[in-house]
Length: 217
Image 1: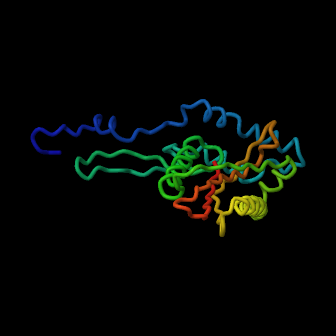
Image 2: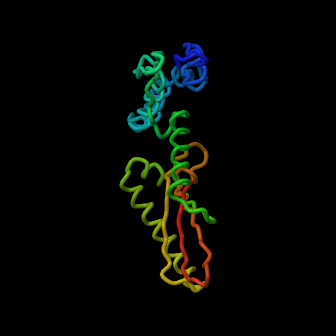
Image 3: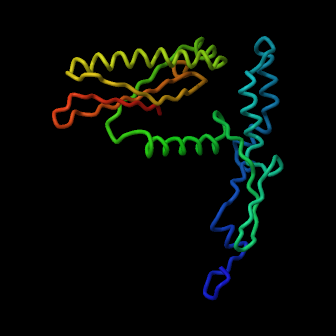
């Protein structure tokens, strides 16, 4: 970059072409949560038996408020060529509330599945919806979620293997990539979704093998 004819590496040009802090504190969502979180938590404690919201829910809110804010920690990044520096705020890496981190995680997971895991074949999606009483019970017990998911997948795999045998396929195999999604509000039937996509590969060259994979969105 120091040779004749190269574009001058000014701080303004470097910042314009590279990283730009997203400034979450300027968004309406961040301002709303920041202004009303304490009041909301106090009201939730008064409505119930005093226990309030689960700890992991409160933690998601608190981590979101600190996400991307320089005052809560940052890394100093320096260009080894020109010496310019910038500050990159730490992210919360949350899974349930932060729009930036959940979007980044979703894009990274989708790219990984499409590029490295899922074959280019037709897919089928399965959704398991649970009632309101079950979603709150499972939300507090990760082991119970794992068990419920195992039961659901066993039932789906068994159904798919029976269908495969009816078509003449032998030694059919099943597989799944699943995600647990939690929703609240007025749709208790979608409080917990276990989505499983099935893909069937048509036999090639007279082969009677039937391959399945699975994906949840």
